[in-house]
Image (tube, rainbow, N blue to C red; front, side):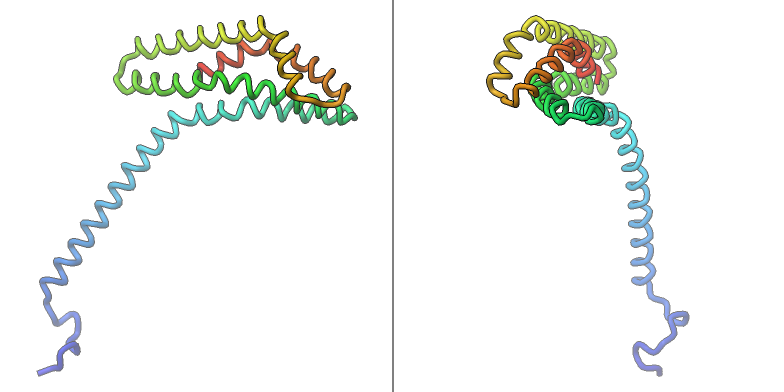
Length: 183
């Protein structure tokens, strides 16, 4: 009679070992199926979220492009003007961040409910709000600039250039806010 544990694995039949291997194999298959479903779900989420992610970088990206262009002009005053103007516009436009974040939620609800009519209504309302907000910012540009430059200080040369930058870029407000509404 052989000692316990010295039998060869081929000669011993152990139903518990077979059951354990079957359970492990089934668990392995379940994990693979879960991973495939999760991958499919992640692809759907990424497909829906990617436009929102991309548009969230548009405003800082515009400021960086402006900064890069002004950096080649040879005076640090241009860079300072972009910095001051960029601060003002970041503050103003993020006041309308609800167009981006709130509209996404309402659109997701309508999309999830397969209600195309409501999704279209959400888009139209958001576009109208963005357009109206942009026109309002243009109409109020003088008091906005006055308050902004009372709160934010720079050298006289930087403030003069920042005011010019502000006066030009404020006319992009309706388009910027409509882009917020779209994405």
